[in-house]
Length: 436
Image (cartoon, helix red, strand yellow):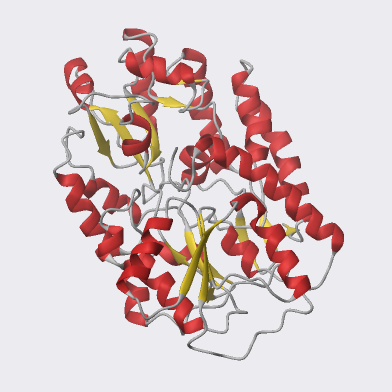
């Protein structure tokens, strides 16, 4: 289980979300009967959390005994349907929500759900500055509609002893990555340097490249173009590596990948910041021995000035605009996102800069890693490609049914791009976007 964005759960959530969004759109029901109650700073707070964040909320409650609050865990896949129901009945809205899906920033602030209270004036400017660029995906139409809990920036994970033994250097460009793949396929057949058989191929490669699949160009408008050079350079890079076997046709959490890892056949893996603790380390996953895994900066595309990464996840805190105690609700969200007492021991990389440093101190002495990964993770946290933004529609199901399906069937990523274009345009238009 991966906190917030478990791979299996991620696959389940996307179709569930699409079903609920379609239902909402077909109903075309305005959010009537949901007027904001009279402000009451003493009103008890209702908090909705996943099980991973629940101990943090409990920690806040214990540290603030004067704050009356009730903490409930909920089914994330049913969130939007429930908000729609609450809007109809005018009651039941939670005051604070934690969602593991960053796209909920767009959904909950849209007219369809009309839930998210802007936090620009509820969270001090000095605190907002501490997030750096981490809250950029929480800014919808110029308003701060959520606070990021964690970041999932991509880095280049690699087996350091194996790289040293075989005399390979860490690639700093994607061209060098391709060259390394060709050498590995020739000299060490069966060893891999990446994976393309899961929906993560979007976050690890297409997102980081800036391929426009969720490029928001204005309120209610997106640009989608799988023929863009920033998309085709990814397929041109990966398809030959997939064919040679240097990049696997399986997803990173597939049993076949676990077998490869336990045979020492995973030399390198571009992937999220949480791959170290939740893919390579667990006994039920790769179970990599101590002192082998290290992190390197993401490679740069030719002609680019920055080595952007993607972002596979990154949960958010959202405050309800129907809360009678918005100030109290915002204080809970702020504490959860920024307090060292909680974030220093959080499972994933904190979005708030000072909290990330406290979290990094823990990893500095973690003997699992061959070298301290925090300096790389910290630098890459500021390099998540800003081209893509949260949209009301999810891309995972479309990626899986097109690109991933082609690769897993023995074909090429490039063969699925036209179908991906068609599906994403339909998705975007079905959720109210104008596609340009």
